[in-house]
Every structure is written in C-alpha cells, then in structure tokens.
Figure (tube, rainbow, N blue to C red):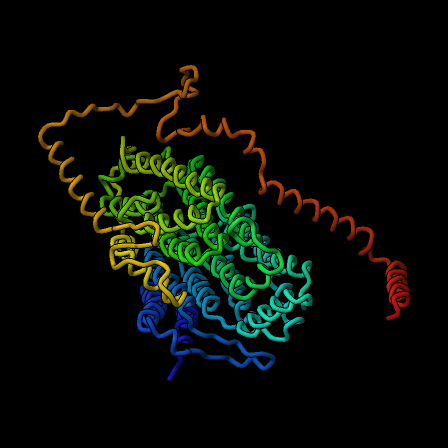
Length: 617
C-alpha cells in the first residue's frame, strides 16, 4: 500500500508531468484537477490522525528524505490542498498550455513537501522545487519580474543552506527532533555558563533564517519581488502563489521558533513581554502591514493592488508570530488560514475579470456588477473578509490577533495593526466602486460572468470564508489541537479568550435584522440622491482638467503627493543599484584577472601557494 503522505506530496507532480507529456486539451485539464483533488481528499481523510505517527522516508544513498504528519503540518497542508485545488480549477479556464500545468502542479508538490518534511535537508530540497516551479510560472509571462524573483530567491536559498550546513556541523543531524533537542540542551548549558552556540553564531543563524523565510513570505524590505511576480503570471496561479507559497515562509518562521526559540530566548532575553528576536520579526511585520497597505492604495492596476495587499496581510501573521505567546501564535495561524481563503478568492476574482475583459486598470473598468453578478457576489465576500467585517473569517482572525497584541501591552505593534485595518478599507472602497459600480465603458457591454471552473473555485473559497466566519470554533478547535491545550475557549460560534468574547452567531443575527430594517425603510420610500458619473473632487486644489480626481483616475493622487518624500525611498531601486555595482565589479575583475594571459595566471597560482604556505597549509 502506498503511503498516504507520499500520495499527498507526489500526486500533483506526477499529474503535472503527465499533463505536460500528453498535452491534449481537455485531458490535461482533467489530469491536473485530479492531481490536485487527490491530495485534498487524503488530507480530509487524515483529519485527526496526526497523533498516529504517520511518516515515510526515501533513501537517497547519502541521506534519507523523511516526511511526517503532525497537527501543525496537517493544518498547513490542509490550507495548501484547499487553496491549491481551487486555483487549479481556475487554471482550467486560464492556463495557456501544458507548460503551466507542469509547473503549477510542481510548485504544489514543493509546498506539500515543505510542510511535511521531517528534516532540514528535505525541507530545503522541496523549498527549492517550489521556488523553481514558481519562477518558471512567472518567467512564462514576464522575464524581468521572474529575474527579480529569481535573484531574491537565490539569496534566500543560500542563506538557508548556509544556516542548515552550520547547524549540521554543530549538531551532526538534519532531523528536526535531534536539532530541537540540541538547541534545548544548549539553552540549559547556556544558563550554567557553557554553550555550543555562541551569541554571535546564534545572531548569524537568526539573520540567515530571517532572510530565507522573509523573502518567501514577502517581509519588508525583502518584499520587492512579490508585486511584479504576483501580477505578472497567470492570475489563477497567483491564488496559489499568495495563498499557499507565501505560507511556506510563515511555516519556516514557526519552525524556527520550534527548533531554536528556547535557545534564542535564553541568549537574547525579552523586550517588554515579547522575545527580543521575536519582536524584530513582529516589528518588521508591522512595517510590512503599513508599507504594503499604503502602496496598495496607490495602485492603478488591480493585480498590483492585491499583490501589495497580500504583502500587507502577511504582515499581520508575522506580528502574531513575533509576539510569541501561545495566543498570538494561534492568532497568526488563524490569520494564515483566513488570508489564504480571502486572498485566494480575490485572485480568482481578478483572474475572472482579466479573463473576461482583458483589462487590468481602474481607468478601463466600471459597472461590472450588472454583467458579472456571481463574480461580484464572490468578490464581495472576499472584500468583507479582508476588511475584517463580521461574521466573515477575516474578522475572527483579526479580532484574535488584536486581542493577543493588546493583552501583551505592545502599543507600537498595536498601532501598526490598527493602521493596517484602516488602510485596508481605503483601497477596498476604491476597488469596489471603480470596478463594479458606476458607468460601464461601452466595450464591456458584452462581458460575461465567470466560466464554470473559475466559478466553482471561487464558490469553494467563498463557502469557507462564510462557514469558518460564522463557526470560528471549528478553527479554534484545530488550533487547540496543535498546542495540546485549550487556549481559545468557547463553542462552535463563540470565541472566548478569557478577557474577551466574540459571538459570531449573535453578530450574524443582528446583521440580518439590521439589513431587513434597512431594506424595509428603502422599500417604504427612502429618498436617494442620484450622483452623476462625472462627479469629481479636487482635494483643495485649483479646479483644472489636469487635476480632476475620480474613483477610477488618480483617486489617491493627493495621498501620493503627501507621501512623495517617502516614496522616493525605494528598496527596489536600491537592490537594482547593488546589482549594477556587482555587475560593474565583476566586469572589472574579468578585465584584470580573467584576461587570457597565461603568465598572469601563473603569478596568481604562485600567490595562492605563497599564502597557503604562510598559513601552514
């Protein structure tokens, strides 16, 4: 009998290869859907079986690749399987050929391998499989965007590989349990005055993992690849990119806590109520919330708006991880799930808009709610969830996160989190009105609603946004299983933190009653003022044609002008300048060292031998 974990990990890859080899329209789509459906089915069947010690290993001669199922890994694999399956349904409509099926499913295998890996080397191998496959997906659409993603991914990969090699030298094993035990023993040794890992070595390891996982998660200032990569690829695949692949970075940070957290805490101590190393992660997460949210508001392209929005929402998760309490960790996991659900839904909606209209900018849209009512309904659910409106799942996860931060008396982080929620309303309001309401351009009069595969994919994610929002206790129960104790109390509809309660069913009841009353007032003849579509605003500026600000054109131009000084600070430009300097330095070295002169090479060899002799080698 084939191991269940092996089927979860390798079925998508096998399906992708078959779809690529056969390349028969209809057949490749069926194979791709099956390749994503099988892992989802097995993940559902394995619910509650993490305690049974399911595992398997592949002997590669030099070392074994080992996989194991835990409560934590099941949670993340469940996210990947659900969002991955929905994204694959979207690909049925939007994929251009077998190339995309191969690499989309390969990246899903990579994510499954990362979440189920039971040792550092297996973790790294599948991390690279996932990165390579996603790079190839971006390369298909935009060479420059893929190059930026590739370079930063290489930096992260080498950072991780160096850290893994250093740990192996010190510990003598890649196995997670052995590494964790070694760091815990070293923490005790440090308290008694001796330790294997010095303070400098721990700082180096932390920095390397911060870069490695930060790149994939989109942590500021390592986020610069994400806006282009998310927007310059198949938008159905971006649902997987944002909803699944970014979670591998989140999972990496959590594993760093599990493996090294005790030792790092003993070495560097606490800042207020958070570990110092964790506060660094949380503060960078807060900056990610702010930067991502502000830049999302300034975008004129809906793909980039949600790319920056995705970066901002990941910041919430990193804040929860960084605070480091059991409640904040549960809040981070909760928001990782809700982020995957509403962002996956958003990107499938964007994929539908682009597929049906061929347009991506606000200036070219409007009035699509009438032509695409189902897509609008699905998008509206995503909007409410991202904005944190009860009783959607986004509200539940953000509420737990807010409470977790506030309870630890961390005002700066609390302010960052609340600012992120405010800016989220700002860009979502524009997206709602500019795309779905108002006057519709005449070339969109024949726009059709979502094709069936995309509609099904959106419906699945929308259903989970609603169900897990109304019954957040379902998620709390799984989070408590991960931690082995009841941190979030309550029942199916109520979350009880001990110092605050949230009753989703009561909120839903009040909401229905309120909507009914508002509808009754409207039907009885409420007065409404019709607003011409040509209405504009000037934000205190002289009234000129050049400065007409509408919902679809330059709506946040005043905000852009206000932030102009800050916007000149570009990490993207900084990285490009560093790249140019490295290229120039390489050219100089090539001209002076690799010059084709054999006599010069002889002198280089003699110099190297002399240095080795001086060192006693």
